[in-house]
Length: 564
Image (cartoon, rainbow, N blue to C red; front, side, top):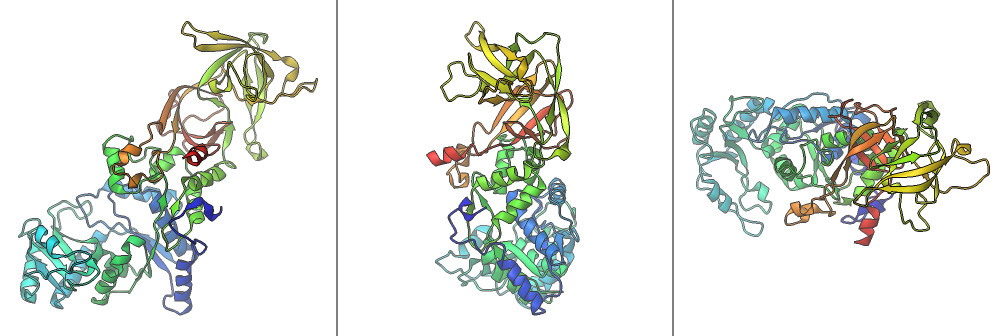
């Protein structure tokens, strides 16, 4: 795939996926590192999404390719928003994507070490307890164009700071009464360096440490020190942490740590027609716009898995888009086309009718049945064949019939002939309607000499349609999933709710399947001939089959986007 799939906020992506490996190559060549150690450090405050997949593939991928290892670390310093549910979902998603971690620590496992590091900064005179209100701290921090103002508590003695910080730890103060701040530079042009908060008081039960602590370190203090404790050599972060790197370095440079990691930033994934903000994804779930974090319309890893994405397709997508230092927006069509390319060679073929219209073949013997041999995969004979039953009454797609058809409509219409896939030529003779004038069924005739889809007289039939025998059909519900948003950049909207696609899920409750289909195995990808790729839903049972559309055979959005 070429770079024209990327919309342009970045110019050149020719060096994508190279610059981080170039850094690693140089570090290994100079002996700066002897083994590559990376980490994927999600906060367990939500489910992983497609943006996280890029970071997972990068961190685990470079560690694997260079013979090193990668840790899955939970940066769990914000107990109000974190839970065991999210921890378990993250582990499941990383494993499903095909990666094994070297170790699986929590940042909270290091709380005792982090507390000791904080004490060291205080003893050096490089950290102090600030007793300002949150509003005063915010006002005194300054802005991008105005310098900050020193806290009136900035010059507290080391002894007072040690005593206060220990009292904070010992549960002697209320939430917000004090914080611990680094003493750096309130006039720094980088706001992150204006005496950032290192610890705050929170009387909240932690999912991992329980009620052992009532003070919690902030992410910027925790992250680099956790990297150092674990011996991480290359701390790979997205570009929004670039302005935090000076603080990352300051903390490590002012403490004696077991190792000295280096942070390198890359551009995060920006994908059209999607949101990757956990806050907004949480809104979608809590407000009921989707059924949950694993709703197949959500680009969470669990939602994509339920919809029928494969781990191979997600890995291939991350490889296609590469890694760059420049922001770029990836067209949704890139992800969808990578998925189609992955599913096509692996998907078992079956016939299914999603919106059925009954056809009665009046010259076919009423009690007769036949079996046709259908290839499970037309390009791969190793997939074998299955028997496709045929009888007097069949179902076809309602869209494959038009009563007043234009000349170039090559499907079924009154007086016209079409080929039934694997079976016979049929000709429409009569249209049966109900009292409301709605089409209920069709009366057709068949040519017995056309068995197998060809006629001995050599006449040509342009249209071939799929079908399901009514006598043998399996009734099912099909969820037709589409993009969740109608605009390419829903996050830019004043209210992203206005961009929600009302047709992102259409439920078809009268679908008909041929009987040779597994109704409950979410691992089997099917191509329903002429329709698209489908997979059984987690809720599917043999009594109540439910299938999700993974992707259409072709990009149905291309024409819509061209017309805008």
